[in-house]
Image (cartoon, rainbow over all chains, first blue to last red; front, side, top):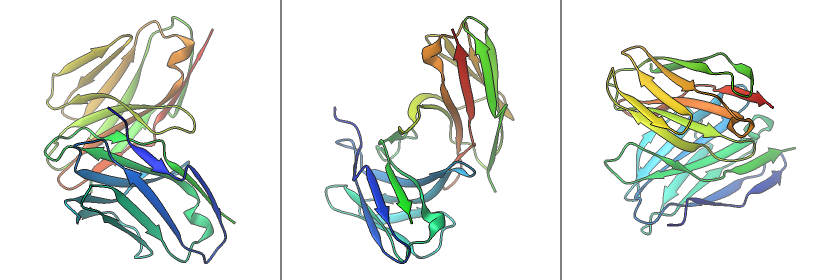
Length: 112
Length: 108
């Protein structure tokens, strides 16, 4: 079974721009979660989607948004980028009802 | 609010020198405690899930245990390839909360 895939793997943007990251979950997994990982804060939960609906949301500003499509693929958008948004963005998928999440390789976002 | 604290932050071991990593947690309604391994530049790799106090799981040189307030990841006779950051996380009522991790270096 193919694992979780994320595109692109690396991105460089400038302050004020917006960015869209993509995640394809493991086949059959209908829940997708997004995390931000920085050296000082570790993994911080952004949001979780299931059946195209946001089920849970972390403590991030409204500049961070996401969506999920009918094939369970998910996108995350960050608008008006700030320097502090530089991080590794990780996507994880799981079958709904299971607790174990499986992570993709992440997208490394650098904001200049 | 759910909290996870891992210690030590970094650990340096000689090859073959066994040790333990600690994960202390507070959570409302534990629905699972997870251990992950993360290599530099990669996503976390799932290792174990523990659900109740007293539970233990093993995989090769790793053994994870759980009490009502802590989990330990025991590493027996580690090898250089065990070098990585080990993350602990708890599944609470609405979300998964991660610790900062323990960076393990095993020296040949």
